[in-house]
Length: 404
Image (cartoon, rainbow, N blue to C red; front, side, top):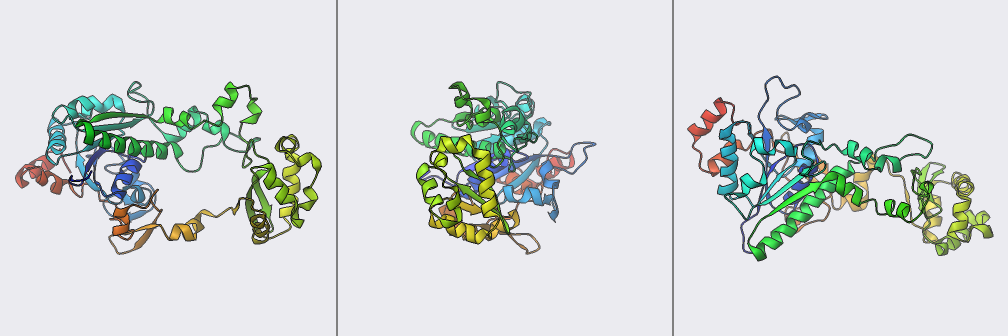
């Protein structure tokens, strides 16, 4: 974007998938304006993005703990897009700021009625990049997109959890986050293409498709004759490389990943693990054939020693390993602490945030400080004035429920 003004992203977003995508734009210095709905009659739970009201209250304006981190560094306006006047305002914002990228994760069946469809928004701005996240893409407009439901549908839960237990969802909402990353990647590609070709692009992200695209180590194996038992859920064990698993120690757990026969030979040369030097374990397939026996034997050995002592031996043998870090200690890991972002709540409290996927020059220039998440409708007046609406026009729209 050399020689251009700061790119502007306008996003009709809620929940996590698109909010994470636009957070990544904020991390590289783009201006991000999120659009939320005005309060609906009879609706319970608070105005705007439902995620504003999930978790502990942190600040006024609908800023609860689940909402804050994915929305730092953004602006927020509220429009009643069921009203034609609000749809006119949306188009005016797109044309007048001008907006480079429009994003939405509204269900596609509602795009036309709310004026969010690509045809409407690109009609007066053919170089607009339009991006949508939905459950199954624009070809399936009536399917709602919820991360755990898609984890269930796309086989993730069948692959996750203890082999003797029920199907289990992954801890983080990985399909939501993968969708956000995919929007970021595709938009950046589209911006590069626009620099060369001068035209916009429609980006249609299917959460289901991208979820299944990640099953590279599972589905093709079935196609090539592997038995279901080779890929079904296996707890913390790796399905192919043996032994790779979590093992108890005297004061916690350690995760050990033996990824080759050479690593195995180094392991059993250590006195702590010398009793495992059975010739039948020299090759991975031999270890796989007796994996339950082997996992039990390793657990018996590691449980006699503190995590630090086990890790010292594994590290000396050049075996990948790590303690099972409690989630409340992750922000204190040295590599996290050195790259973490931070913000300040309106009352002055400092809040640490996870590091960005990649530390960008924009974030480095700001020393990792990002603006706190916007209050509901905090920037409505500012943005509407910027596109030419007068204060009395804004007051009328607000009095009639068109904006907040």
